[in-house]
Image (cartoon, rainbow, N blue to C red; front, side, top):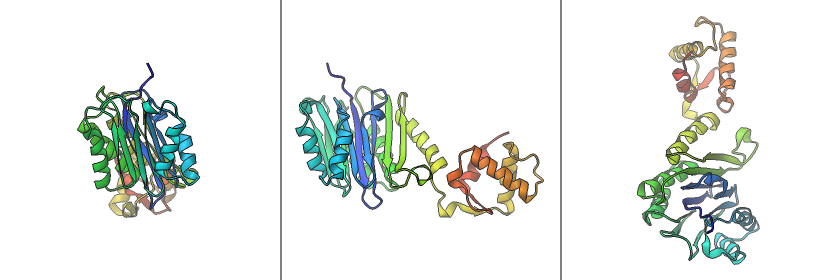
Length: 287
């Protein structure tokens, strides 16, 4: 018997930002290593059921060369003798979407498309698992990653994989969105084996945003008054200052050491200002 990857996934793009990504959950070890494929400004591909990993790079090549989502999916299927056992979703950079479920996929299996997304799943409890992904994606706000994760969680609550839960992943590309602006890999997070993979994926996504997202303008605060006192006390408790009575030089030396040790380089600001997200983190630290 072929090894079946039972899963549900949503592939999507944001034409305004050029972001493209996939979120996925399955009763399968390390599903993030197989299903999600995306390229900023090009589109996204999800390949599952008796998955064909070549659908990812081949599909993105078709999209990059100008094929639409449907034309790309048609080409992938036409070149695959085992297409009846495949399931896939494709979204192009313009937001056109296509989904395919082969006739030999295990019930419940199917997919839906809407503006900017394709949602699909197999060996599911019910059809609502897929329809809820689409409904929540259409009605949610935030970044593409936020919307993908909200859709994944809604799918689980609606029924999910009939065999249970094991792994989940999210992969999103954004031009220059990676660490230091040096790559397009904006979010690449996997939970390979966990009793509550979606909850764990949310947890590490929130950590990812804390460490790697840029400060929001409304969270940039001047280091003065009671806020500075809180920062000094936090740095002291965490061992970055030897005393709460410090001069400017030792204060900023301790603050810089804290930011770099805790991997907050992306949130480091010009002298005299601090990100309130960093302050909240510092307040929780203990010596």
